[in-house]
Length: 387
Image 1 (cartoon, rainbow, N blue to C red):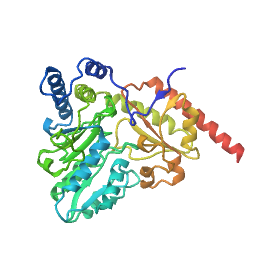
Image 2 (cartoon, rainbow, N blue to C red):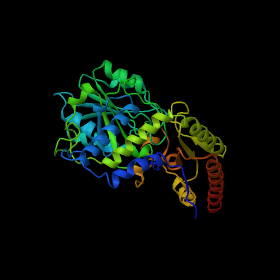
Image 3 (spheres, rainbow, N blue to C red):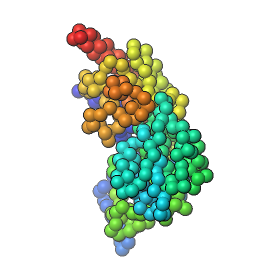
Image 4 (cartoon, rainbow, N blue to C red):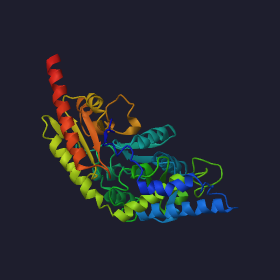
């Protein structure tokens, strides 16, 4: 049986063959610990990590020393939010974030509320975008930081990062952004966007799972307390033996993104637009989120009257898609992102995220549109017969 067509690239990506080739030696004979300074095995691992750190930094226009290597974006988010809050000056206990953030941000903010933080959760409009005036109005003299996702993992909506960061800068407030879905898909420049701290993961850009990064701008590096102690690795912010093989793969994947110069984004956008065009021709079907400010690979479509889980189960041997974030896929509740955008529970339960990637083909998109349309018609017919 052939593999299902994979349209869940926002959940994870396959390893690029060039990444595999770069990683394999560090999983076999180049197995040294990057912290071992007394022999050649450690030297080789240390040099490989330094090279990868530079590659990661170059992708986002940062300096290598501003990159803290982690196990992924979730750890980086926890390190940034908790680490900044723990070291905050007295009276700076206010955090501003958004209702559509990833659960890694929302759950961490909820934890910090129990530790005394006051958190403002901004609304979004029907397009999934924040109101910059409301952001400005939410800032007080006690505001410590603003946490705003770069590109939403469920809808692909891109927030006005530069404008929001400018507001933060004018008010002497730290600006954090979860750029997990954006890095590698669109140009991300931490200097141009005035970002204080940013996090992203390797496995979203064709690198191994279990590796990611926290960017901390030079002037803010003293404002973070470590979560993990025991050796002082990663500038004292993240102790523990480094995942050398994963880091090497992460670096190579970032290098590939730089070399491609996002040239594949145009092709992916065209395929996404084709998918949307065909599926939105189906009766009682609508698009969730902005059609302008969004990632090139992501679309979230509502099939009114059809439960997304039923459609996914009927097509799961032929198609791999999701109703939302992989981190909350076991949850029974409807998408908090779609709810924040004003969708009813019924419409949220009827929505599916399609996320394309480097290996998606036009033939696959044509197969998917035919399959989904056929199944929607069949499901609606069954519902009418049983009504």
